[in-house]
Image 1: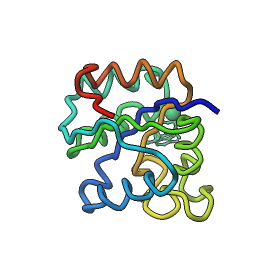
Image 2: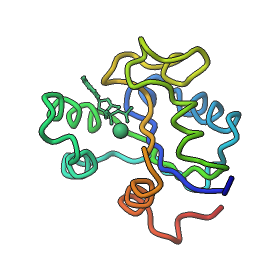
Image 3: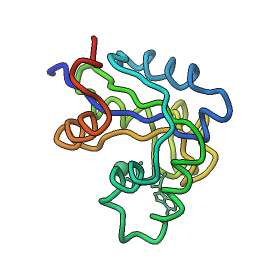
Image 4: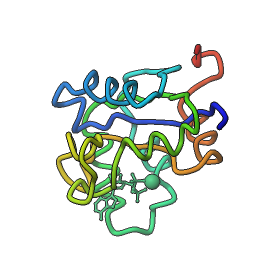
Length: 140
Ligand code: ADP
Ligand code: MG
């Protein structure tokens, strides 16, 4: 299995509750390495662009409101089969459906305020990483 990269966001519900370290530790314990990381306040435009794939979903407006409601931590994660490894440790979108030990089971507040984002394919990982990071910010 090849070493690949994925894109992660620690969402505002988690930064608000001071869970940046706890979430990152869970990612690291799952075999992922943080090769880039920055805490930032997303603009509404950035949130709408990032979630453009969901723009016709009924929750789009509220999702964008939530993503700009406080700081986020955007990260590039590296590891063997990183996209799947991260999706596995994140757990299901709805924390009510998430497996024991997953980040969303442990920490998520709701289907919307669900603590983390993770890319769903290698192609989207590359797009999402480039949306928030310059190559020089990814330092291994
Ligand atoms: P995932 O983050 O697991 O890949 P999706 O890509 O389907 O899930 O959705 C993106 C984000 O939109 C979710 O992480 C969650 O914050 C929000 N979301 C998804 N479904 C709902 C819903 N039914 N109601 C409110 N927010 C939702
Ligand atoms: Mg998704």
